Figure (cartoon, rainbow, N blue to C red):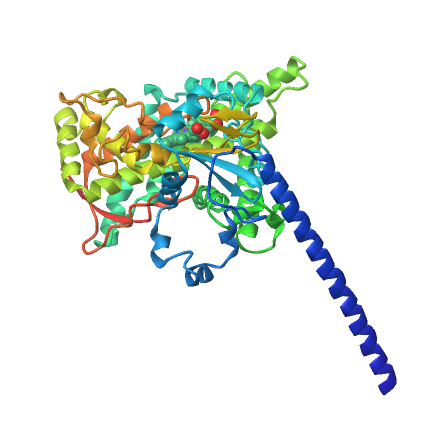
Length: 533
Ligand code: HEM
């Protein structure tokens, strides 16, 4: 018995030693292979813009693999760097490497464009080559490269964007006929705000759910012909899930999916959460499309979804077999408009109200102007914009300082291009740093200070500035700009006409650098309101 046991032991250790040898050999082989192909690939990138040295395999984002406490221990992340805006860090890199510099996410080359001159040059003068969207795993997984926002630059994108833009205008986008829909949401916000303010007993009200509900209801009315109550649990969950999905994709270890796509299937952490977010949004949107199909009357389209379903039927009737108008495509378009239209506008309103709370003198000035033009009771209309110039300048100044879509939506070079003396290879992800444009000292005086009058001339008339580009420029410019401007103007004017906003007694203001996802959101804050009349 003793003999047979020692025989077994010998066998196991022999097998283990084999396994170890094989494992070590395999690991060495894989490492050498990966390093060789990494450096080979680097050689292919001759004459690319300069940038910080990337780590092999993981590129410049390897830091995500190292736990935060270790990074702090080795000085890679100071305590207060957690309080630092990553946009400041990205913009500071331009001081070291120039306004066009490179980073690597794994082996994916990313070129960051900084400052007004460079961003305009790329997106206006070279717009044909820099208007594509990235072909990278996180985006492909989430969007299948369909819809509008992440669709490749080409004929399908052109047809789909033009169709949606035209039809959305038919149902009111950017037109005065949409005002009652926006006013309806504002009336609810005002009543709820008063109620919650009283209930809070001075501790303040979180404006985010109210604002985001009112804004998303406008887009919902246009595309889904439906409004939701802000306490509707399912609706709230979906709005939150969309925001969370974006946050995970852009600023969490989930960016590593772009380096190791298999991570997407991991059964824990942000990877699991991302899959759940995707599933929940899919179920919600598919159910709404099915309800539209059941009740569709081709003679009386109620919203964009109906118009799209009618277009599908018409193209089928015409025998167009390779048409891009499909239910599947519609699903991604709805998702796109919902995401693009909700978070961006809601965060802009939240930033503007936060700045009003932090600058009571400017709040007073805006309110004086509103009183002069509208008086206490007349509801604002978009046609008042020309008379409410200081109010408009204030909205623009907050948009400049906060740039809610700070890196635009990532672009991609559709062909190898020569740009400002560098070679940008086909497939490079291009990030226009809009945030840096709005802080560019070569085009703005004292760019970090809050000064609405920079948008007014000596006679108090509004100045249009080319370097003010919160909606981007070029072919991929925001499709909802007119709608967003109208919503911002009506919401801010209407709320400041009705209420005085202030921080609750003894509450410190939130940090002003914001939370960075695909959009830049303010940190949560609460306000106390008092009726002005
Ligand atoms: C204040 C609110 C908003 C801001 C600051 C904003 C800003 C932007 C920016 C910077 C881009 C990317 C431009 C680029 O990639 O170069 C964009 C794209 C887009 N936005 Fe907006 N947006 C806002 C509201 C809206 C609304 C309400 C809609 C709804 C209709 C919308 C729909 C879109 C779409 C569909 C795109 C993708 C365009 C394309 O790829 O062809 N946005 N937006």
